[in-house]
Amino acid sequence: MTTAFFTDTRFAQHTLPGHPEHAGRLTAIQKRLEESGIIQDFMLIDPREATSEEIQRVHTTEYLDVLQWIASQERTVGLDPDTYVLPESYELARIGVGGLLNVVDAVMKKRADNGYAAIRPPGHHATPTRGMGFCLLNNIAIAARYAQAKFDLKRVAIVDFDVHHGNGTQDAFYEDPSVYFISSHQSPLYPGSGSLLDIGSGAGHGFTMNIPLPAGMGDAAFETLYQRLVLPALARFQPELMLISAGFDAHWRDPLANLQLSLPMFANMTRWLIQTAQVLCEGRIIFVTEGGYDLEVLSHANLNVGCALLGQDTVHDPIGKAKQNPPLDNDLLEQLLNRHELG
Image 1 (cartoon, rainbow, N blue to C red):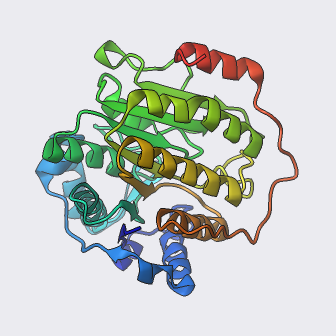
Image 2 (cartoon, rainbow, N blue to C red; image 1 turned 60 degrees about the vertical axis):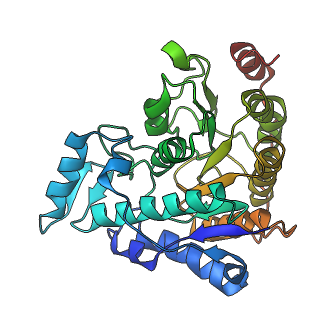
Image 3 (cartoon, rainbow, N blue to C red; image 1 turned 180 degrees about the vertical axis):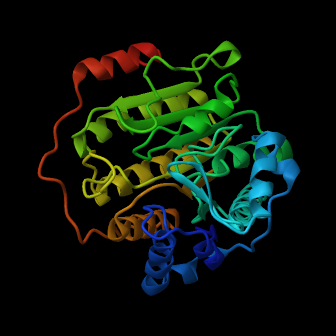
């Protein structure tokens, strides 16, 4: 299989000492991919800056004006206590989005079977009107709108397995039946959204699926969720393109959360999603990096994504599984199945 891959060493310029979302995250991924030799198997995608028109399919002009103003300053600005912006950050975020859109082109034009964008800043917390939660531009939401506009897609699915709820992505599509958004996340946890009762509104009612999980849930719970809920929901929706917000902070060793996933289970989820795309949409699936703050976990998880996309069976796990692996609560599963009419 051919995998279109984009990353850029310039993303390291967006960093703040002591902040969990720092340059070393992506550097660790890039180094692991290079040392493994897998990067030689990818179709490397050239960078470009996303245009204002492309970004404004999701974000307001007023918010982009704020980012542009910060770019003219000579200091670091905090959009909120968690989210820093350097003068060069807006340009770097546009390069991240632009590279991702080039990956979309490669997949949709059948130059590649699937795609993978290792970019930062991450994106899934950025709402149409503001950046937050380490995120400036909502990379995956912009990619969905771009694919719809350029390739006339009627149904795009976004699956987000980052440990934090993808509130920005939800906000972008909450009233839109053409984009099915599925988020599994620890709850309660930042940003405090993503109730199982939130399933979309207006024409978009039923096209948002939130799977809030208590701390301690791990491999067994996620296998149940994917086999009983996530994969059947995707099959019902019949997407023409699948986009994956691939955060790896649900791993048991991540310092910012308390779910208990292992690297092999992330690899299983990745393969299930790829196999689903092969059945539903000619294999058109693109993974986009989000969170993950243990660098060893993060780098091996992304290597496993690359292996799966290329059709390789290898799973790298030097860390091992969590000590506890409780089953999913049956009441929660039944609520989700009933809420989404999948029972």
